[in-house]
Amino acid sequence: MTLDELGRYLGSPSNREQLAEQFGQHVYLSLVPLLLGLLVAVPLGWGAQRLPSVRAVVFGGASVLYTVPSLALFVVIPGIIGTRTLDSINVVVALTLYTAALLVRSVVGALDAVPGPVTAAATAMGYRPLRRFLTVELPLAVPVLTAGVRVASVSNISLVSVGALIGTGGLGVLFTEGFRTRYLAPILVGIVLTLLLALVVDRALVLARNRLTPWTRSTPGGAR
Amino acid sequence: MARAWGARLIEFQSVTKAFDDGTVAVNDLDLTVEAGTITVFVGPSGCGKTTSLRMVNRMVEPTSGRVLVDGRDVRSADPASLRRGIGYVIQHAGLFPHRTVLDNVATVPLLAGWTRRRARSRAAELLEVVGLPEEVGRRYPAQLSGGQQQRVGVARALAADPPVLLMDEPFSAVDPVVREGLQDELLRLQSELDKTVLFVTHDIDEAVRVGERVAVFATGGVLAQYSEPPELLARPANDFVADFVGRDRGYRGLSFVAGAALRPDEVETVTVGAPGVVSGDEWLLALDEDRRPRGWLRPRATVAGPLSEQELEPGGSLHTLGLPLRGALDAALSSPSGRGVVVDRDGRAVGVVTAHQVLELLSTERAAADSEPEGGR
Image (cartoon, rainbow over all chains, first blue to last red; front, side, top):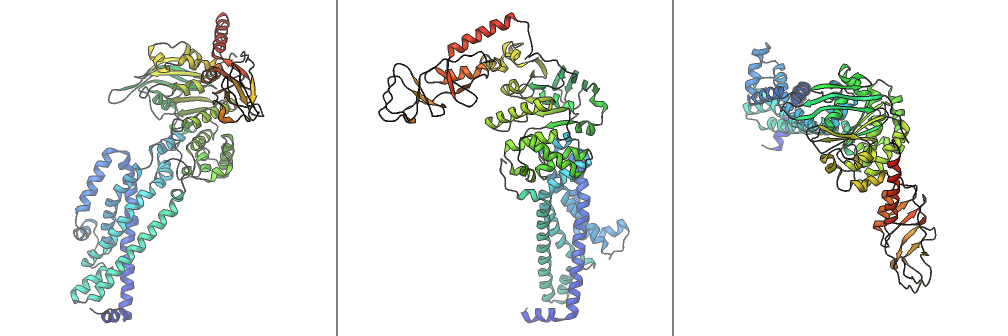
């Protein structure tokens, strides 16, 4: 492939319009499940962290779920929730499940990492469990939890491409099209845009974490 | 000074705590903590002292028996509301790392529904009470030294002005010098605030230092002795307590013998910088121009030029006039001349004492105490 080919591909206004649309779909299909998955994983992780029996069930379920191939999940979900086969909601649901499966361990790990004396002190101060979780444990879990969310975001952004095989849009379409027409330019553009998206989202997550954890950048004056 | 004990504030009534695996942490504990006192639970690890403490604010529930605070069974209260009325200071302070010092201290008032503004102004007040500068309030706990963190922990526990304060090994994570400062601070605070303080430690020195009454726990959660510190050191109830309070308990007991009757002897002195000093058969105490002790000059020493500190033997510890006899004996024992230097409150030398003098005074005091009816401190 020559640069000319790439230039011709990107030079076409209709191609560019299509790229923008696919990029937008990709952002939507990867980030909405990231958020939903996080919202599912946090309460599950809370339960799992508090109760060993819940932990066993949640961890077992998450492991099983994560071994189901994504393509299979995309195809099976319409049958379970009654959506149309080509509906992008299938991808959203499937990726939400993956994200939750991936993040529930991070949530438990992050909550485990909150120092025991701190939660004990919170209890002794008179915090009730829900308020303690939302205002003490969860904020302190952010640094460890962010690490999990960063992995999940990259995983989602790459998995959305698979959805193109069942026609749900996103940058994956560039790979299926390129492969079908033996045309390398869209594949290359697809790879670059996917990488770019992953990088931008990752940076955004790091910035968000820093905004949420001002105390971690304070210079220590004492021990630990 | 005899002290009238106030209302019984915390009562343990036949309290037993057994864990699921069968270990008994607390065994049939009957004990009353008087209002307005500092009561210390002390014992080796695994003796149930912390477990007992945590039953007061329902962090641990007893297997049988009752814990009463102000005459009410703690199990009749909602745990969260109960805890907001009981200050709690934990080992390593347990401060919230994600909140500024000011917001840490404001925690309980905020939970109790105060406005943020009022809670913060109360918190600022408390930082002053525990001796921290105002600007510390804006920092995060990680930016503070261990000693400062402990002070913040105490301020946080006091924020809602609870009548009861539980302190679980509050000072064990800081070095000895800082710890002593914190202990003094606690005693000062207590003299102003008059809380009922339950203090847990494994350190017998700390126990007799801060406690008005000390409960010694033995392994297996059995209360071995509950008495005032001088009594504990002078008359251990059994071998366990005698062993636990240690070999030098007699010496430690001197901390509770007033030294007011001590009359230091005069001593020949010399001023640092004086020219051509010759000492006779006695040690000479060297002072600076403000009469502060600098060291001792050996007998039969001749100094040609002006007397410099290099020619002196370093002095021992100093005893401040009026403090307990322990300091006087230590001063005598640690002095190269065998005579301990006694200073006034400003650190100026007023005389010397020998170990012999201290011991003699001790026997007279004991004889006097034995002929009097028993009193409190």
